[in-house]
Length: 81
Image (cartoon, rainbow, N blue to C red; front, top):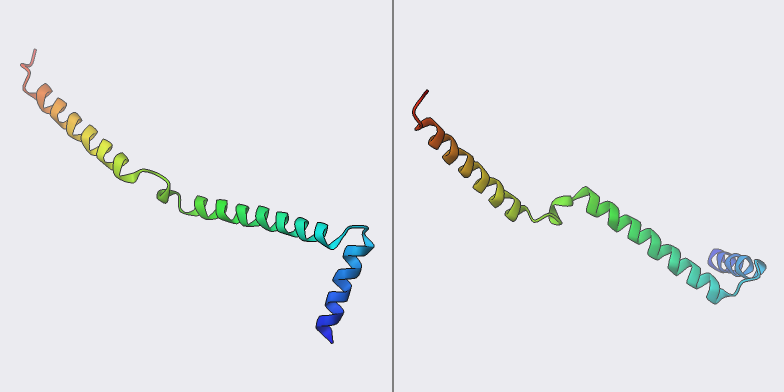
């Protein structure tokens, strides 16, 4: 009884606004697509490290630190003025 009542209310609302059930279905599908897209964006913002090339960044940082240590060792071997 309740299910048929809800269905009839939805049908009355969709038809009462001058739109067809197909237009209502398309509108709901589009709104759902937008909301799911916003949710996916939120998930990507929560976990950004899945997007970043972390291995490449760590390798570049390691190489730069090794280069700086080597440069410091070279400076310490120079004669003092």
